[in-house]
Image (cartoon, rainbow, N blue to C red):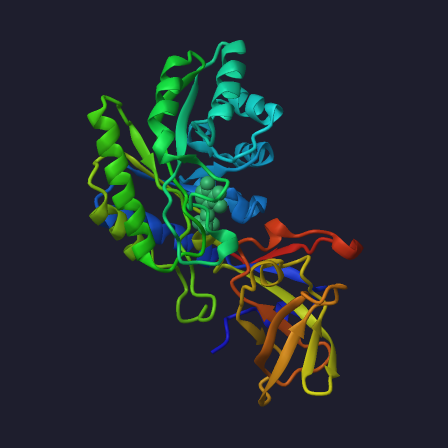
Length: 385
Ligand SMILES: *Cc1c(COP(=O)(O)O)cnc(C)c1O
């Protein structure tokens, strides 16, 4: 089964472009709210991770649905504010916050700085004090939990650059409590991305339970926990699995966390990946010695994930019902890594056929570049009726 695309509408459009199904986005946002309601978990708040996709139309929808924002740069804080996210629901993480970014976030009155090192804590406290402000702070903990995902997107191991190792956490908390420019509030984690094994989140819960218990035993008050994001989606079956397993994900946390503190989630990919596809045309079909190549007008500059992480997206020929044949699906960029898939079974391809690369709503448009002087591909939206 192919996705339900308005192919008739596509035939008049220049390619490549990103196509976003806003109905699916809306249903996904409703599903998240529904699952949290099922668990009777009003103290849980979801912050959308803007780096997954900062397209303003998507941001407006997500903000209007009452979600908070998770940002990793000053530019993302500005994008969140422009889209209408309430400042107190904007959280800001990142290992390398520049002075101007810190100042911008302080001036906006954002809800939380997720601080990743003692050095950053000192700079934040100083800059807040100069402005006569008190920055609300959570400390990002490196829990040394392995996530079973691609090594380029695990972030919670001791050797990753992210967070403060839990063995020195108490010392950094006490320092935060002594600085007038910051108020210590809670703990933040984010162990990686595209995680499908819920056992990884369970391991994070257990590590957190121990850390919180130990800190509380030492008289430290923790007011909330932010468990980050990372929930994966089924890239190979976008039609069978329209949405990520939000029920299983939230249930894991509600079952395994022993604290009854307010919980924050930062989901990116699972919210926006399924609703987006990269639509392109076949420029040429080239018969190599052993393989057929389908050469598309979309390239790695439009969707970097296959080249960067060896990610596999489902690819469909929207213009053909002819017999299936294996193709190496490649882009026009002058890099051998500009390959969307090898030996992909597609309905027989001809020049001009429309091709959909599915589940491209996350880390597609937001990672686009103009490499090879290629123009940035525009976004096209489904009608919302
Ligand atoms: C990237 C990121 C997220 C979102 O990750 P997803 O895998 O897209 O859900 C959440 N929190 C932080 C701190 C991040 O850097």
